[in-house]
Amino acid sequence: LNKPKIVVLGAGYAGLTTTKRLLQKLSPEQAEIVLVNKHNYHYESTWLHEVAAGTINPNQARVMISDVINPNKVRLVYDSVVKINKDEQRVVLENSEIEYDYLVVGLGFESNDFGIKGMAEHAFAIEDIDSSRLISEHIEYQFAKYNNEENVEDESLHILVGGAGFTGIEFVGELADRVPELCKKYDIDRNRVKIINVEAAPSILPMFDKELVAYAKKSLEDRGVEIKIGAAISECTEEGFIVGDDKELIKAGTVVWTGGVKGSSVLGNSGFELTKGKVNVDADLRMKGEENIFVIGDCSWVWNKEADRPYPPTGQLAMQEADVVAANLAALLTNQPLTDFVFHDKGTVASLGISDGIGNIFNDYKLQGKAAAAMKKVVDNRSLFLMGGTKLVLKKGKFRPF
Ligand code: FAD
Ligand code: NAD
Image (cartoon, rainbow, N blue to C red; front, side, top):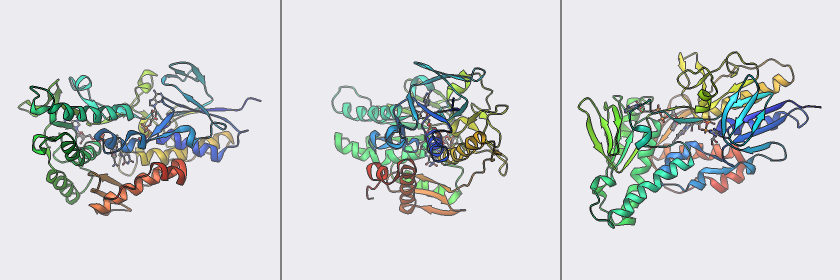
């Protein structure tokens, strides 16, 4: 007898959590489960700023999928999704095709440069393990060559970061810790190095209250980060960013864009109707007008009725959505009613390097400094625990004292 086939696309927080929950909810007789991912590993996207700064080893942030999902229970396909053909219930992969009865799209985020001239060509972006590792290796190369080549410009040691949202701020926080290490390693005066963070809005991290923002700004500036607010980047050239009304050129040997994210380009390539690069879903997380396609994580546009705006894309949101999607798939298979998604906000913590941070947790309890940094590590280790239990926490967890 043919079992219904559930195909999950992407093994990020959204896809991997959905798969784990499906295994708990469904017996092998009830459905065939297939998980498709570009690589044979999952990576902790929330740690990518550390990979990009070189403060953790890329291997710490990745987990072999077969270590956390039993390949005897789920068919694991390591291939890239090119396109979803929903009329034929078929997914086109780079090397094959796969049919589905039910589809879960969890293909995650890509950097969004909003069409700014030169950004795609000249700036790095923090998108996955490979793009993040490239940034840390590029930075290290700038340091390694500084004292070994003739006519190296001082700007080669400057690191320019566009956007002071969460990613930009967490990244410069790590850089503030990494740069002194690199200076020591390559015998370079710290004063020769600049870390410059450029933000269009009048404040960094506007989602936090003024006190916490002021704390974060001071912590970063005290460790040598230059923050330029109210400075919109209009272009990226080979040399750096063009910023503000007076079109100032800020030069740097390393230029990184952290100005925003959008859903996977597979969505557009599949002809899906998009809202700001994402798929609009109903309260049960199904694509509008589709009975058998769920879209979650950074690919979906989910409305927060209370705040009257979409939820910001986060790992926390993706994992909670995954729980509901797995429950709704089980409900569909057993002719039960579907549940609407409700987000339970557990709070937000932003790191400012290895031993500093700010946060708002448990209904507005504010944290800063080492307490926030410690909480961030608890959150990071919890994420590993949810993926692979205590064994994974002991293998990849963050226990470095600070
Ligand atoms: P992703 O994590 O992007 O996973 C997508 C998966 O799909 C990946 O495995 C990828 O390899 C795979 N994939 C992509 N394209 C294809 C394809 N074409 N074919 C096959 N496979 C494909 N959120 C928080 O809640 N807390 C935080 O502290 C936090 N920190 C962050 C720090 C940084 C530096 C960044 C960049 C983001 C952070 N976020 C944080 C946001 C969070 O990482 C995202 O919201 C979350 O990763 C979304 O999960 P996802 O499963 O939808 O996508
Ligand atoms: P974001 O959209 O949150 O921030 C981008 C920043 O870039 C904004 O402050 C924006 O004003 C600025 N910007 C945009 N265009 C600009 C321009 N032309 N010139 C100068 N500045 C410009 O993007 P992000 O920081 O990558 O975060 C993406 C998502 O991931 C968010 O939902 C965020 O909540 C989540 N995230 C969460 C954490 C955490 O919880 N610790 C960490 C990282 C990311």
